Image (cartoon, rainbow, N blue to C red):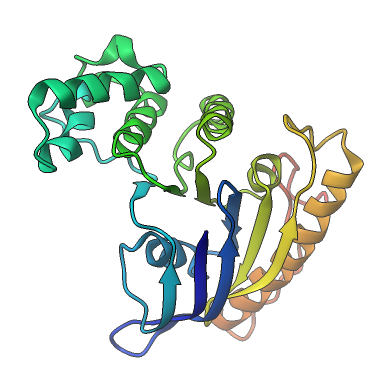
Length: 266
């Protein structure tokens, strides 16, 4: 179980990125963090994964985090196999054992045929699968993904969503998933955490109790959940924009959801 109590993160200069965060994630749960830019989603993920330390409060439950970012950050001079091996080599495992475990991880993400390829020879989706394999080979007790599909085209993103769910169902790892897409969050998650900014805090914690795969266009219950979250998110985006724009600005046109055309309304 991942447990955060009264988390606060203040950066040098006085900016409070997060304040008073309380969050409990049971073993094996898939949780998405959504919210406007600057609300502290990535900061919270870093604190939960142990990549950063809070200014106040505590985080418990994660000893071996696996982390995947929006950019795969593979070493360009290493092959895919060598990239996946890297963390094991740092642990001092023999080369043969490193290679065997890395090959198994690549099979898990269906990338074994490209073990000898270099990152520049891979598509964006393949690089992200290699990054996921690199995280999995270290046998994490939780997986933290910070907008891992944000830079991908829609078709590749949809394919990797299916791959991620298949992987999660097989491993039953706890997953913390940062995304800007409400549709993606509702489609994938057991819970959706909606965050507000300045300072970052949780304003909604919504359980998504529905079988997978999910079709948000046909499931009226899921569509209603997405509508409620979108309404809350729209209010928060407007509040933040009012602070950032000049005083003569106002949001005359409502925000639009994914797949809708501008001006069609919420």
